Image (cartoon, rainbow, N blue to C red; front, side):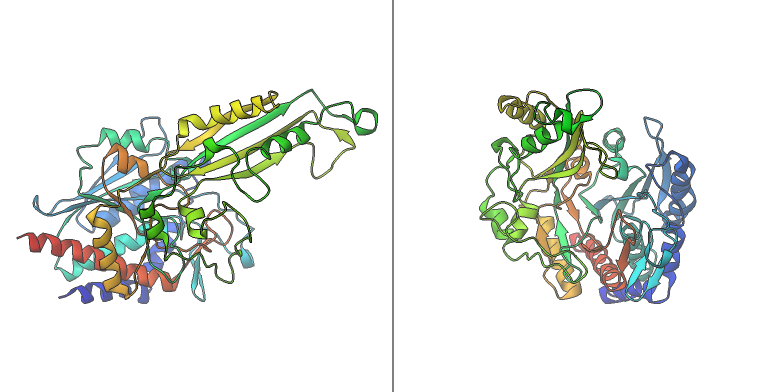
Length: 461
């Protein structure tokens, strides 16, 4: 039996309908981690669905309780030989709100429904579909190798990624010895595009910044008080305009990243951001000057206004509001001092005539990525190209955020992410979906990668 047999076996799981039936069963668990009423579903997904799936692959499994009493973690382990390479994998079974009633044709978010090339359902892209692909590929390789993988594998699954992975670092650090591995591999987030396999080495960090101007209680008639009462909304808008301009360009130096290295520029030189017909077009003349779209997205910092509020936008009154607030988010790359950001904004605003604005951090996560010198990068790229005939895009980091720092920094592992979704998948929104075409290719990619990892152990001997 050969590498090609393993890839064909993985694809057959999709063609037979077996993969989609399994995904439908997993999507049916309403694992909304932001909803306290779903605590039982979060635990059941691990104990009723994933533990049996891993057991069928001869993994030993156990649930690890959260130190803060939140949802448990699943630890699965398969040890074949002490001399074989060991890969640590990750996935999350929690999802965002289902948003029932908002999906096209009133689709049920808790069913995996296939329409043409799309499979709709909450979690199909983020992340049940993606870790299901990896499990299916593991199974295919094991079947072709006669009940063996050829390497050692460990898997940790959490149920709190959508609420910021609050306990993941603490749990992983407490399990440091059990999570020892040669490499970390996981699948989450989108590819660069539906037709180009992608590797990314980490993620941008992010920090939410809450700005509030509270000048007085209540609102006051704009005809009687206009021109003599300061307007907090006007103040807030003016203050934000000193941080980022009308073309999305950062104005405060402390919010900018270090200079983009020649190595990163070279890596991104062939990366093109080309939205499909059902994705939004790139905005003309938006973002940092002198950078390509790929550099802006993967190698630069951006400050976005996520929400603003003052008065009642649905029923505006002829009155000057007493308060205004906004939530901003800085997405940042490695080298940005996250611990300095809020103080830098506060100092800048107060010195610029806005001492009335309260500045605080609302949520933060670190930026991290694997060193470009890691041999696992080229090894993974060569494996993917052998399977698909395509040179994968290699990105220094994902544009969004994932708990990569837990594995790269807390556990000290080289981290490789191979995503199986695409930018137009509508994750976190109604109509979340995966593409059958990408899923089939991804099953082949992962079966080929797992096969090659097993060959590495054979060649060592």
